[in-house]
Image (tube, rainbow, N blue to C red; front, side):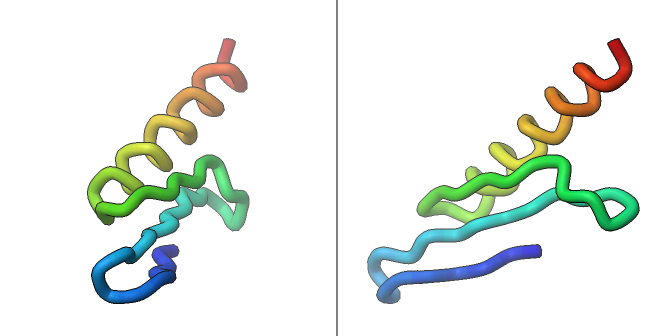
Length: 52
């Protein structure tokens, strides 16, 4: 899921990573790619903690 907020010159993107309907990570940044990477990192950390 990706949402955009803010004026054209000050956009903020929020991205969520989910699996089986459960949100595993969320990231917010001014660049879409950065938000995706933050969400993926959070999801991987959460998965790693679950498997440990």
